[in-house]
Length: 589
Image 1 (cartoon, helix red, strand yellow):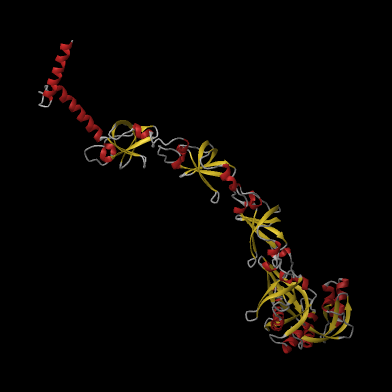
Image 2 (cartoon, rainbow, N blue to C red):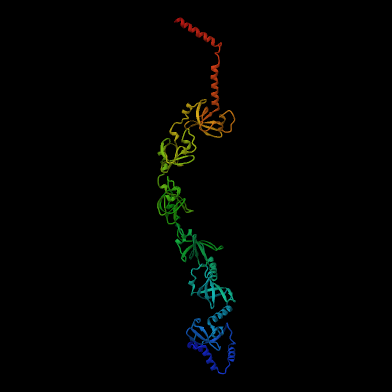
């Protein structure tokens, strides 16, 4: 009745003063203090946060009016009932507050149910037991599972593999294992993953006993990596390596399979102790390498498609599952290739020759240049020894120059074959890149792909006749100092012809360095001490040349100053004979 009166008061908006006056008139002689004591007496048996029984009186709008035996009725939200109650139905509710600010009793059916559910769960379940319930919603870090009371299912405990959107589980009925009970906080944490792991453990044990190598079995793709695919065989995973997926070339396993694909595979190797299974997909079909020697005999020509280009060569697919390598050195007889992409690109159709087959390693060596005639096999005919050739200086090195005779055919002009007489420190003193030069073929070796050339051989060797005739031992010659070394001096006698003036032949006194006597550019008179045709060397002396000049000067002086000497005994008979002969000639006259 009290609840109805309050609703009426609210409905008609009766002022508080008027209400108190009318209540006082109605109560007559009843003391308010006495009345308060009677009210307190009526509610003394009711405590907050206790579950009490009540009877449904009625349903008003979104609220259910419940009589719990107190002086006034309480309210419960209709939304707390899964099924709307009937009038007169007895229910259990939680008495949250005996009297709130408005003097109303606050009740909760939902909280009462949760407490009763928790009590029943604690009485019947413990950590490690299995419970079943429906996923009601997603919360921070996981899901809320209703098993009579809400329990927490962490996201990491939903499955053995990483899950996508855990919201997909809402509404599903799940089984889980209790892993933690906190009675003080009325909190329970469960794990579905542990149940799955336990089921898989039992299945794995059974599978390991049943499986055999070479057996064909069905499985589900659970994970894909760069190196291969993990396949769930129903309790245990097997590895399908990328090399065992196809006889042909694939760059990534995703080219053949996707997550959750069901595939049939062959068990290649089974290690029960380590619980490892190696799987194969390509082994379900016959290897194309089985009769490879019959299909591709050595030296036979074949056509294929370039499927990969590496620094060291190109892979050519001859058929599905069979590829061969054309090494960079087997691409051209004559072209200088820095990278195979200069010759071929992926997708190119090429003709090749089978060079070698290794069936065990499943390798085929191919050649592209062998399709054409080797131009080096014709070099001896085109460039015979002693013939004169012309070419372009393609490159200079410390030891000589490479002369391009034709595309891909170079000859080496060694530094020692550039001049008969000139001492050359570097080929750049004689030639520069792209110069056109004439040379003589000295030697040809087609097997080593070498042609030896010479420039000096185009003219006769001056050391054979010309130099020995013009320069003789003891001759005094004039030259120019061109270079000083710690052991002596080089003297240019004529263009491209030098002699060595050893430090000991510079002066008759002891010196530490040639620059104490001469300097570069000085003109000197030297005496030829040695002429070595074999080693092509001329030995010179400055000190002996000067000593010879001094001796000749002294002889001239002595010849001018000395008196005429008397005739010797040998000379007198000769003079008498000459006189007699003269007298006879005069007589005849």
